[in-house]
Every structure is written in structure tokens, then in C-alpha cells.
Length: 122
Image 1 (cartoon, rainbow, N blue to C red):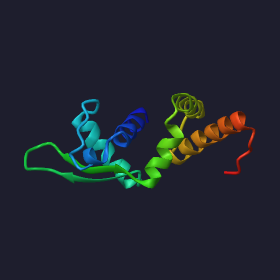
Image 2: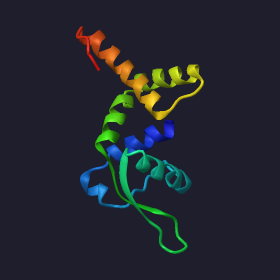
Image 3: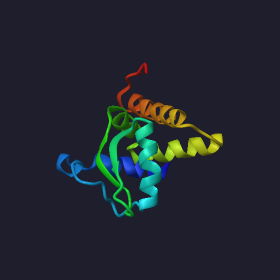
Image 4: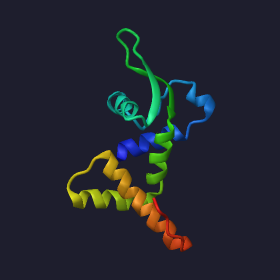
């Protein structure tokens, strides 16, 4: 999940001009992109198009976060929330993306309530 978070952060950090260019980030290997990009797209976290010239590596085009992608990333963007979320799922011994998001959202909710004194009904 660290790779998923890093990829979402990288995609979110692209300008609108960069979003029109092929996605190329040296932090991710071609194999990582070929594995994670379709999964993120299938889950509805990103929109992208894949181009595969004959005999060449896949090229990921028009890469951008969806509304759900932004929402998910915003729950795990904070490094401390991410650390606590990972600890929680490791203690549980298993998780799904929905459970990961729910745990992170609960931690964010708790942080907001601590800082503001306002109880949120989410």
C-alpha cells in the first residue's frame, strides 16, 4: 500500500499541463506502473489510458485522480495518519481498501475532533 499511496501522491502533484503528458516518474519501475495503474483505474481512483507501441513498454496517458481518488488520498495524505493506519491494519492481520480507508478516515475524524472539539458524524 505504500506504493499505492506514493503513486497517488505523485499523480496528485502533477500540474494540469503535466497531466496531458505521459506519466513518467523515476520512482516507479515500468513493472510497478503496469501492475498498479490498471488496479487504481479499476477501483475508480484514477483515470488513465494505456498505449502500447509494438515491442515497447506501456505508456500511461491522461493520468489524473478521480473524485474518489482525491477523497481516498486526502484520508491518507498525512504521514502520521498513514503510519497509524498501517500499524492498525498490520495488527488486524488483513485488510481491504475499504477497511484501510475507513480506518484512516476514523483517525482523521479523531484528529479533527481533538483539535477543534467538534464531534463529526461521518
